[in-house]
Length: 72
Image 1: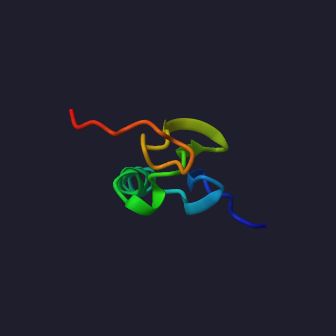
Image 2: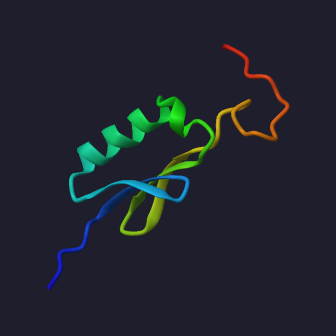
């Protein structure tokens, strides 16, 4: 019998983490939000297939996005 992973982190359709460690999944999720290669994707943290948290695409990084990013 194969062990099922409780946590999953996705960047768009790409799965960047699967495992059972909540702390590790959370750290990967936060780190993905700061990586430029994931700015144009929705980043999601899932627990047993259900969405727990998510980051949307950053403004100005979608190829069709004409909005300007502002620093707060």
